[in-house]
Length: 185
Image (cartoon, rainbow, N blue to C red; front, side, top):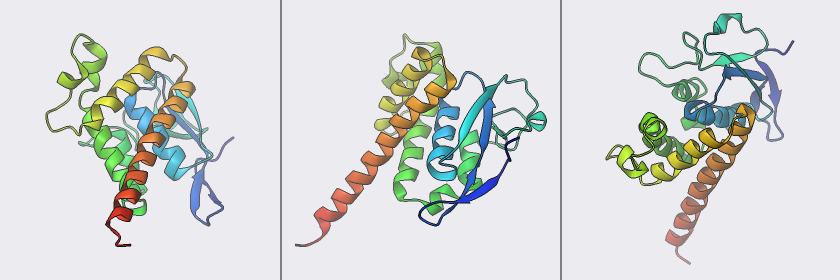
């Protein structure tokens, strides 16, 4: 049986949770970003499995459940699953500002998720809220594409990691280039 929260020290001396994470089958946008947050910032060795939405999270003994109704890491009280992880693990405070920017971009795409999935005749641009960052449209389209084209949940997460890593790395690189451009020679 896998421990829920085994701790391990990384090569950089950082303490991370190592374990198995269990979420709802048919991984969609919130589970994609949450999986990325777990793998990138909380548990680089994470493995995932998927169960029916009706599963009582208290019955899951082989891992840490997330996105199950009624669980600690679920959408309730005005917070979405990924926001619960950000809050519990203080991810914004402990990481470069690029993470906050990724979350801001994701939040804009998340607000249009149902429309983009259920009403494909509506353009991505028109589905987004007016205050969404420009990049939210591209992220939304990529995540919708993963969801519609890929049936395997682990593969959905893997493909989403590539998208979120590229977004994060792009923001980090642009931030570094902007800082360098401001430094007098």
